Image (cartoon, rainbow, N blue to C red):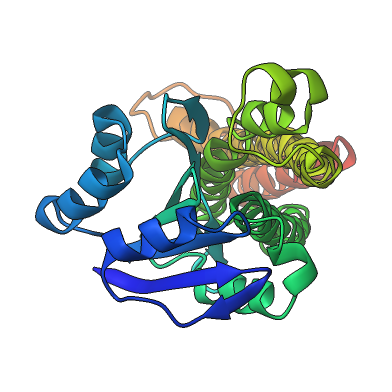
Length: 332
């Protein structure tokens, strides 16, 4: 559905016709005006009129309707198409969720298509409408502000993931919880969330580098203001730090998993040593009792009056000796 359709002139929102075609014609008659149409999960029928009026490329339209795209930048004859993946993180459930924002930029127009609940663009529109100096740069300002908002939220999510990983690491090395059977599952689940986050941040690096590169802008990326490179370069720098943080999180969670598995292996070895020690201690009296339980007539000390208590004392002495030996070696 169409969330908003607004005309901006000289950095300010102005009244205009409600019809998309008339709004675009009005903006193209004035050099400093453009129309911004925002859509949320449009159907093919709802998007048909927008496609026809703005001359959007059918391949880009297909991507915008179907979603599930990687972050990318594509240049067509009449428009520039950019895909971004905003993310959200719920620290209670430890789940990273992602949405998609598609941005079409062309001659005097911006069309944004949003999928998912992440990164609503109402805040971006409100921010721009309170910054007329920025909005005077036209569609480029819209693209920059959306990218800036998405990447800034990446920074927040990376910080939250880092905090949760610190807690998970403390749990792994805690004597009380390190051996929990659910710990490995939690670590693996966390690693999956980091991977989901990386799928959003990693592929975005190349499109932002293209937008931040003066040579590329002057020769191959149209519909972008010529003085926008420093702004996109700043967003690209922030994204680089996020990607470095994500790589660090991925390495650290792998190390935590390895440490947990090593702890589990050591703990299992300790348990086996204890079981072996107790089994050895149980084997000694069992062996002696077994020998004297056999029905032979001629066995040593069968006729001695103190043979029974002496045998019990000998077994007790052997048990004490074995216990002290295993205890000294750390098996018990």
